[in-house]
Image (cartoon, rainbow, N blue to C red; front, side, top):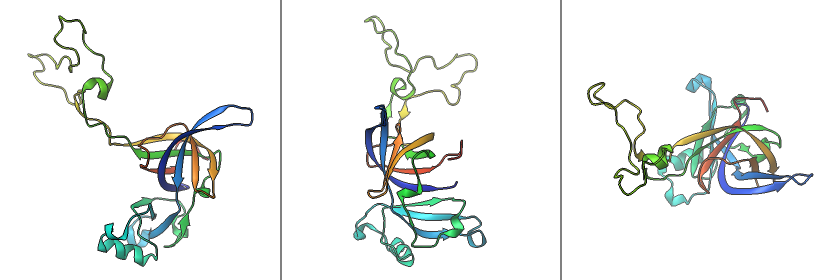
Length: 211
């Protein structure tokens, strides 16, 4: 990828264009992200940069991670993430990746972890319809038919069932950057992105179209 950064989802807002149109946007606090380690093809077999983001109390950092950050001459951070950038070899430990890496009009992908909703039934989890809601029906929000008894005499793999809903990594592709606030390290992205307020996200150049 050409460029990427990690940040924190602050929530949604709206911006107005010059002709008065309203654009719904998600506000991302992106960076500053110090480069903690540079992966090289000679040593690691691939090229990437390891970046950090988010404040954390020193007492909450393990001793190995403390040494890892000290080697890069950076303060400990909450999140560590590898970014496989095309120009990874040009970075060195201690460099900063800032929100101004992106500009208005860039096409991007956003990776985040969706909100956790716990154990959910098939209606909420898979958007199935309810059964008859009359008093005579004893099956309102159930799974439905599980398959024939005689053949195949089993439940098919991947059948929609109740279970854990949410808390999974999701990528929203081909979004656009509406505005970048360099002084506050904010990126305004058109539309919604996955995750709760305060959740970590990765903003990267899209794989579908070039910026």
